[in-house]
Image (cartoon, rainbow over all chains, first blue to last red; front, top):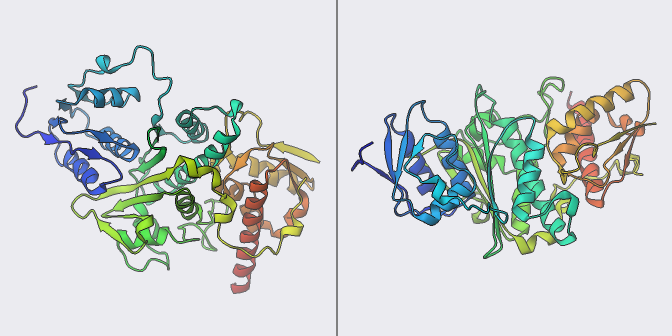
Length: 324
Length: 103
């Protein structure tokens, strides 16, 4: 394939720090159907959100469409190869073999996975264990204190993505998960990305939705007990109800561990520590589905008390619960 | 009393989190209680999310009411899991009672 002056340029960073740059880049990949050249000369950082959104974008291209990557820095090639990022994709120009570490990556702290129904429980546990470097069978107490809030958050976010993305006719949607522990500064980042219907479609009839916009839908989703399938209208036999607290609790876990969520859906995104009423626009590069980045500080994880972050509820029934 | 061990075959799982994992157990619980049996739900020290616990028992409370609690015993639960079970139970009991009041 001949090199083209019409190459699409990677930005310097694909990450939660600049969601607009990330989604604008992915929108440019979706803009055409022809083969295209990607210039990666300036790319120097990609985080779990960038990995998951980029992988989701590349996996959903028309059959036969090929991307030719040029000038990717060697350290970025090694980073992508570490998690077999290009496997199964129609991507040329990246020397995968030269990027491999012949000794494997035993200390790899980054994982990327497309999640399939029926395997999600085991996949999520494996991702967390790989990221923090321990197994359930060899649990160190300090690492356990870090693992619990991470695994809780990942599974609540994953549950939301798997249960909501395929609503409103989006039966073919998928979910991607990426996790990384940045050992240099102790930051932990998770990303859960789907290409489903998005918050607005699932909440369009909810009374808490202030207006029919993606921004309002994200804000509503971050309120406690707001859910598309909670209440007397939901048929118990046909649709499992949820309590509408998974996302809000996860946001509180991130906050309690010195972090935040970045939530993007449709033409809007917001960051939870900036205030839920402060959102930003993706009007020129909307994301079809939901993309969430969970950011926290590893050293603050042991202090997270998950039950205290659940919504307050009167304990009228505690005496009727039998614990042994 | 029949016992359901949630940890069987899940040694590599740290936190029970997915509703799809809980659904088969919920069906088993409902079946036992429907036959008039009492049932023990053994968490075996595993952690659990609110979503998992809600799928396990929250829907049963919405369907049958708080009376169903007298047929269940929760075993080997960490303090966190006990707190989450209390949250799910209280939340669903309140929801059922408020929906019935409106109806």
